[in-house]
Length: 295
Image 1 (cartoon, rainbow, N blue to C red):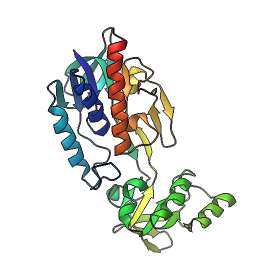
Image 2 (spheres, rainbow, N blue to C red; image 1 turned 135 degrees about the horizontal axis):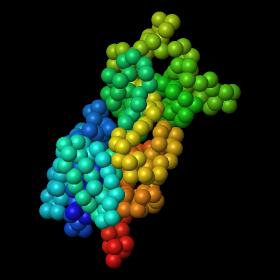
Image 3 (tube, one colour; image 1 turned 45 degrees about the vertical axis):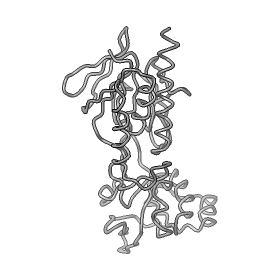
Image 4 (cartoon, rainbow, N blue to C red; image 1 turned 120 degrees about the vertical axis):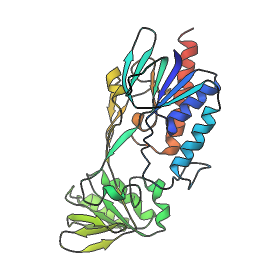
């Protein structure tokens, strides 16, 4: 019986576990080893780590966490979660079961990409979702915004601060007069022709035969839960602009008592820096629930 099981050993999960380790709680981290940003060569916008490889940040963080004697780590997929009279039971892909008094879900999300030939192969390399994470490195170059819905207006109006921007509507929606005025004010070029495919570094081939060479492309994804555990436990979800996320209170506890959630699975939008802060709050909230609720 562990004090806490943390499912997910990336930025949010490790941050949560670190708070608990420093409070001398017994912790098990269960992680399948799949990071959302595994396709990106570098990570940006996180204090002290700007420009480092995402995997290196996680590796260092894990090594620091594992220096605490009350922490264990298993590399396996968590497949089932159940609430019991004394806490929770997690069943993993290899059939092992683990019990804990509290549970933290840092299980992340899956990015469901627009269905355009050539996009998936370039995801995280020259095609991105976060301007703050990758916009600066395009060095004021040629930027494309691929529309997937009216929400893409937000991207299109932001990106001119990072470079000359072309907004590819690609049949996703038609801007109204007010939106067109906003785009014009920001100097955004509008492209109505449908996209055939993406090639080269980030070259957009249109159906009329034109090719628009770009240095980078930004688009929104539709996200879905990377793990079924929150649904199995009966946690409430909220509908975010890009997909559902686990509802939590200010201490990161879900609607199921004793289950906490953090990181991209528990936020409408996220980044490495935000995930670390979210995990830190979840770890502290979980620890305090063990003290004051079980007293």
